[in-house]
Length: 496
Ligand code: AMP
Image 1 (cartoon, rainbow, N blue to C red):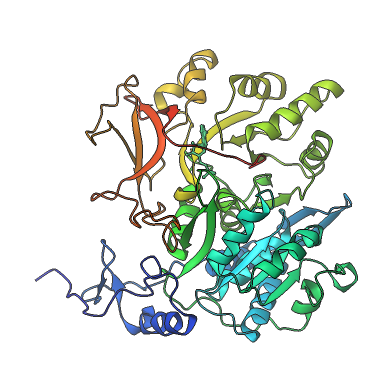
Image 2 (tube, rainbow, N blue to C red; image 1 turned 120 degrees about the vertical axis):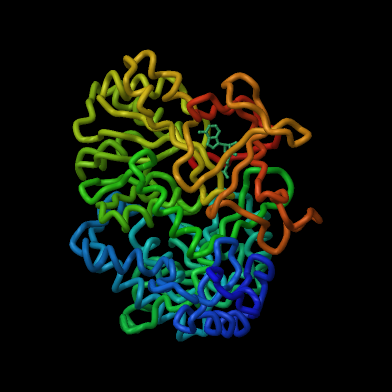
């Protein structure tokens, strides 16, 4: 008989169903279901014995991404803009070493599988190290958006039960205010050296001092791929923010999706300016995809004014970048006023809100830059669609291509999408009739972390796994989706 036998054991570390499970329970569970114990997973997610399978149960865990970058693209650079405007340079190899040292510090303090460690920081290589350092030992990297109201941040930290808070020194005043109201936070670490340590809050650690005290010899990975890796709260709707708890598996598959040529298509030759902040929507998965591709990664820190972005683009020979429309408008206005041209940039990924036609035209006509419009949401890890040209659209002249480039785009492999009426009846892909936009896939949320906090049901998908995005859209015969309206409230704090 062909079908493998079902393993009677419960699902591993079912953090989606019981994300508040204690670390010791979680760790025990993770061990019991370690791939080396001979279990594997069926298509529907149940544990099954491997029976006839002959392939390695290679867990899809995020430590592998940075390990790959360090081993095969070790000298490729990461460049970070400091607050004082200067640039810090490091490599994937160094980031890997330092991330492991940070893991060692976390471990030594008793942080383990499924524990939440928050970050409150702008884009920098140190922040990337913290991400991988946290995830490498199975802890959860919880990114906090510094632009949120203090009351929201307080709610989120307490809801997530963050144990450590890793922050840029510039946010010290905010941290000092939050700390007394967030009793679960045991330790604050500032991403700086001893000399840069803020005076308050008292007792905080300097990241550099901390990692200097630990070696790279720390066990990474070796837990189940369904172990949670990241936590992002959506600020997108009214009511309490809702947490989306990513798993190693969902982030890994999302990262592979970004590498598709019809998606972001990163490659080792790319130099990527990551403007999208690491504190919002999983940073569009860029710190993962860039590492996997072995691309050079350039981080703008807090400086998103036209001059600073222009200097980074030209100075670092950036060929590819990703940001919300407003950032690009600021840059284009600056270039216009100074009569400057971009010489190395070839494509920009624009999403987060609808991309104005003027941006696509200005980039194309004045700078020879191709805009790729993208749509997604925190609940999707976050990528949903990209407006890359299919074979028919590519054959058209540039003017006829504009409606395609302006659309929110097509799904990559890994996302499934449909539109329905209010009664759930599936609507045709005729490009005319709008309906509720629904998605499903391995990178799509099934339920919010510890419920929604305001009494809503936990499951947020229907019986067939469809998640209602709250967006209203048409889909045309070629699969291009266009958002026409919104059935939800949306609040964006800007820049993300
Ligand atoms: P967030 O989870 O904060 O990233 O917000 C996701 C929401 O932003 C989506 O559900 C859309 O309503 C909106 N959004 C994201 N990208 C686009 C886009 N390219 N065009 C229009 N709306 C977008």
